[in-house]
Amino acid sequence: MKKILITGGAGYIASHTNLELLKGDFELVLIDNFCNSCAESIKRIEELSGRTVKFHQINLMDTQALDAVFTLEPDIDSVIHFAALKAVGESVEIPLAYYTNNITGSLNLYQAMKNHGVRKIVFSSSATVYGDPVTIPVTENAPVQATNPYGQTKAMMEQILIDTAHAENWDIAILRYFNPVGAHESGRIGEDPSYPNNLLPFVSQVAAGIREKVVIFGDDWDTPDGTGVRDYIHVVDLAKAHVKSIEKLASSKGVHIYNIGTGRGYSVLEMVKAFEDACGHSIAYQVGPRRSGDIAEVTGDTNKAEAELGWTAELGLKHMVDSAWKWQSMNPNGYKKISTS
Ligand code: UFG
Image (cartoon, rainbow, N blue to C red; front, side, top):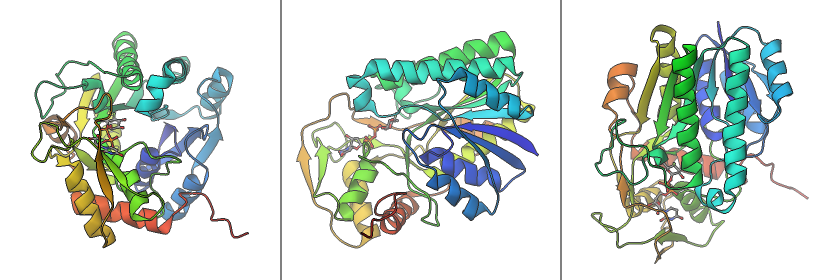
């Protein structure tokens, strides 16, 4: 059984990836500092999979604690590195915190891997590294030109890994996610935002009556209905791409970079309408000004992932919104217990 270390192991994408890995011949060691996640997701992963995982509550800034995990688990085969601060707007307000946490945390992880002879890693990157691409669907060869500190940290974490892979003979897969949405079909794990930064968690909370209305950030973009277009991908499809990547690194050396999306774009209005169908009632919205830093449209060319990983997104828009609504309905407070007092 291959042992995989998962950083940020209690988070949204990690929890779905863990479940997919636990269907196979993998043993998991999770680390997380719970700055943006909670232990309940780990408990639910164990319940859903019928398996146990190892867990260490540590911060990647704590080099001694990190080293101790590698010492305790000497047979780690590979790492999946999810841990990072991830809110674009916040990264503009507190860039130093983002650079410190994401870059130093990653450097510490890569150094610990080197110290302990672990040379395989799947890195959680983002389509945000493309900034506002000239051609869409964007391919992996497009220039990296992130436009905000969060995106810059992802681009830097990629570059540090690529340089290390070349110098140290590491085998790495960099996955550039488009817009992950949806939840596990059980409704037991999903995205648990304290304050939603992204469209679908916000729409879910409006549909549930937690928030009054969705503000659409501009309807004067150069798109068919004037609202922003994105390549939304079901988080379970995204999770499966990680399993394929781990399998790929077992036989394929060097640096691999893949777009992980569907290649199909939906507008904000299309997403709101699809969510209305999922929840069975109308969702209040109003058009507001454009959000600073937004772009009109981005979709990903996923041919490379399909050809080299044998992976393709299978779950369409209906699965995305239905599962997001199921998660929202079953967990109105996210992973927090509803107070009965
Ligand atoms: N939007 C609204 N109202 C909202 C929230 C979003 O109209 O309340 C619109 C945005 O303007 C955009 C679309 O919905 O057109 C999607 O916005 P998100 O904030 O959900 O996602 P982004 O595409 O801006 O960014 C997301 C992640 C990034 C990641 C990027 C990859 O937040 O971390 O996708 O493309 F890098």
